[in-house]
Image (cartoon, rainbow, N blue to C red):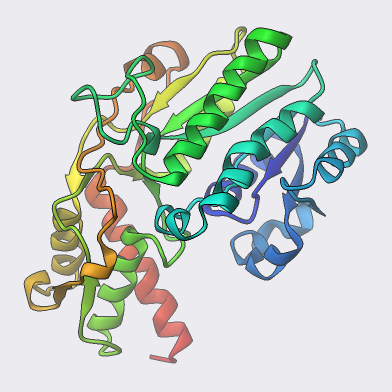
Amino acid sequence: MPKALITGINGQDGSYLAEFLLEHDYEVVGMARRSSTDTMGRIAHIADQLELVQGDLLDQSSVNALIDQHQPDEVYNLAAQSFVPTSWSQPVLTGEVTGLGVTRLLEAFKPDAHYYQASSSEMFGKVQEERQSETTPFWPRSPYGVAKVYGHWITVNYRESHKLFAVSGMLFNHESPRRGLEFVTRKISHHVAQIKLGLTDKLPLGNLDAQRDWGFAGDYVKAMWMMLQQKEADDFVIGTGETHSVREFCEIAFSHVDLDYEEFVVRDERFYRPAEVDVLLANPEKAGRVLGWEPHVDFNSLVTMMVDADLELLRKEHNL
């Protein structure tokens, strides 16, 4: 039975990846910080099948002890300060966790294991090509994006310098009903459900014209695993190859519950970024060709899935 260590297992991606690996007969060890123990709701349904341990990417001795004790065959580094707006108010913490935390893991890493680094489309930032591939230059536009670039390149450096099987997945935006409420997609779906149920009457948003390549997180964690099953370590862009605006997300979400988004969405300057990323669009051709990976949940289905899940959640919470 192969053993996998997932850092950030209590996050959206960690929960879907843990489910996937359990279905493939893995022994799964999940790492979370002590302060994150109250956010285990995403994995509560599988907690009895996991070994949950405390660890902190800010502490080298903690990371060393974790790797030494569990000797994982595969390591998936999904832990990060991952909310882009927070990276402007906490840039040093973001750099320590999202950037240097990668180095701490690689320093503790065992040469015969396989390592996955969660890179991000935010690394492309001010895009240099219409569709971003593995060779598109990076131009990050936030402290989060900058930290992810460091994590990406240090992974490449350790692969080349120490012959480690270490890969980076440059995942474009991927969402689900398990997305945190602070992220714009879940903010929209949750507010739509609240409005439909009469719990609120407004949805404050920033840039409605920002465009992203949005997919379903459950599809994307399979790509992570597929990267670690290859004969040679390599990096891959993962996305749908389609772009949609925040406005489109609103239109579909509100129309799904027979409402007009224009009656409820209000523009709020607080939600604009200091340096905006206007468009992100993946070129996932290499992932399709080499890994045989493709997304299965389309954009419309993703949006309606999230709205339906929040309607169900709120009805239970409020006994509606």
